[in-house]
Length: 282
Image 1 (cartoon, rainbow, N blue to C red):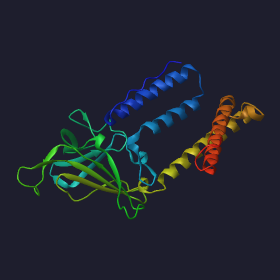
Image 2: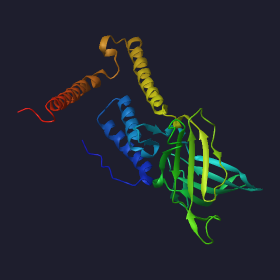
Image 3: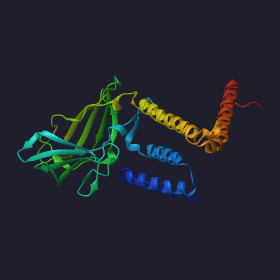
Image 4: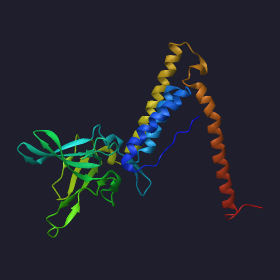
């Protein structure tokens, strides 16, 4: 089987890399006639594994997933406080898919764009770069409150609080409070060169990722259950032949069994070493 080459790219090109790899993987699997369901699962798992911008694992080992906060085409948020008649400021940003977020043909994490009579123009400033995306807790003393996502190293701007002539890069901060999902972000009072936004959303809660995992398991069970009933009722299959992808499952069972036994052997080896004071018996 021809190997699929994976080139290491920076974060700003990672979305394009994921798309290309998914297409390559789909073609390779199709050539070897794997079941369609297997194709879907492999593409899903690869997309989840490569999309690093969507997840953050904190110092306690808990992983947050921002995929459900991502928006097709990116968020477009009008600043109602910046209205100047026919002119207004629009903030455009996203958290996983950054392909739509462009300023002067440059893919970034967040931008400020000028809108004229509701139409977004090409007049824009970069509020933060994709590769500078960082995460933190809203409150280190109470991790249940939520998280903050930051983009930095945007275009230079003048901060009146700084000495005359001093410029500093723009930033964009997104405060995600744990709670029921709000419809959209709220623009916080302007902090000169730092754009700040707030939203209540379940991705900021420490149980959000486990909920997503349970939904994924539910979908798999629903698929296998529905396919099993279809095979029995429509195709008149009986016994194990009615189980979806039974031949594939049979080929995978020995591999899982071997991995399980290998894990047990390693665990027993570690226990023996511990009992002998960290040294193997002679």
